[in-house]
Length: 245
Image (cartoon, rainbow, N blue to C red; front, side, top):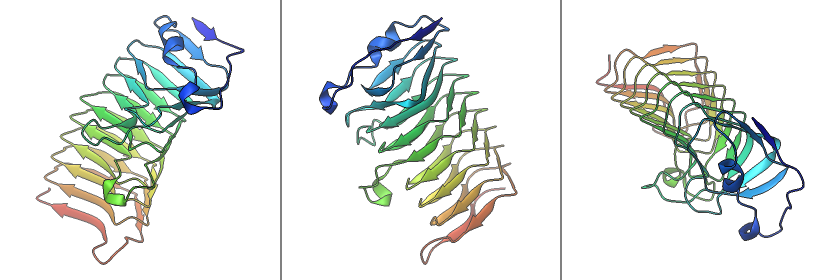
């Protein structure tokens, strides 16, 4: 099912943006939502396998509250959207996108002014590809969220993303993920592993960050063909290891 709506009004005030949730709720499982161009209010919860295609003409603005889009399902796709203005809670992991499922795709989106970019928790076989991600640049670097966060997540592919001005990309308690062809700059840790095994990291470009790649208590990580340059500050590190083999 393809749901294509037209003539939806735009509003000047952020508090009056039309809610996207109503359009999402109207889509049947397996269907596609192509909203008319404009700005829509979030947060949005997706709890069924659907596709939302913004055609690079749709913004979802969370109004500074919570996560912009929560994928609480398997097999959904978010693409060609501008996701912005999440909340500011580290405890709640306020994000551009939270993924809580399997076989979801988050691709070709602009995610900005969001504390965390894409947060995957206990999620498997997802794809995060060709997104442009930045955090809340009004915050100090240590107070920003992570561009991509994997927590107890397995067999995911994080590829071809452009990351700026976020805190870290972190992989904790996660295995068998592929992180490739990403570009990160203006961050603290381009990539930080903790208690994670058998992940593959290749063909990434990391520059103008405090640390390129740091592996802590993480075994069997494959690092190949990565470009790491201009580690910032007196304690800058290209690649660091701690109790890792």
